[in-house]
Length: 318
Image 1 (cartoon, rainbow, N blue to C red):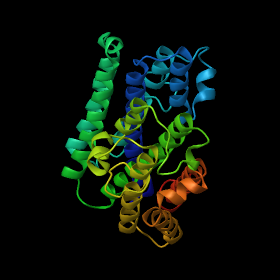
Image 2: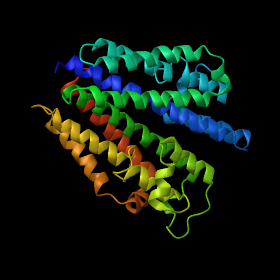
Image 3: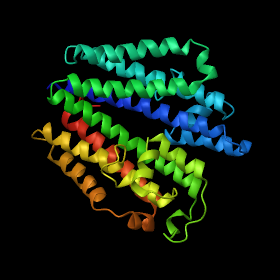
Image 4: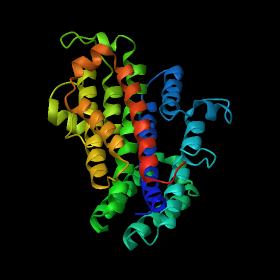
């Protein structure tokens, strides 16, 4: 496959996944902001949304105050923010249009219609009254895009690069979400918590973290007890059967990298396999003992390095 074609497919999938992840973060934070809380608590929640995406400085250059209205505008409809939903859907569509001949008609029409419909929704005042409806729609369209790609694309390199982009982006987002939310909610003493004497935690905030990755019902099914921070971390880091966990994402990345391997990708495959092995054989008590923040920071660095390796080996050179 031509490197330029692979590049467009890879980034089409990443941008679609990023749009969904942004919608998930905003929806959960919006729902949480409706709970009784202080003004400072509400502001910290919206600052966390910006922190997850590393957009605090970019936001402060355009807005004076961190509040729901400004953050929602910045993260949903601001074209100058390359991580806003409108920018991500636009980038996904442009990458899809560049490789229109490689995609099935169903996948192209799904991607194109998502972009057109989203712009119509932005002009509808109903969005301001019920933003959750729009976020649910964005998540649904992302699910539809993945389903159409798997259900209609030939099982060849094109689909493999789409899958690599999807799960690399998902791993990055899950790690960022965990790092910011756990640091804000649990504080520096999280790593010192014992399994027998964890302090009381706010049920609604921990459940919000799980809901942001569609993990609340899965948590109840797997652990069948109250929501505990160490179990939340275990579910979202080490459980390979949790679709949005770091372990599940890396399993998909390694499997698809193996299917597109070439003469120069052995080092990238080795690094991906090493990262997957650390998750496959890791234990949550060891991760918490050494520090969750340090573990997630290192994971993000390794994922970014892996993305650079994939670009170097397969895609258009930056």
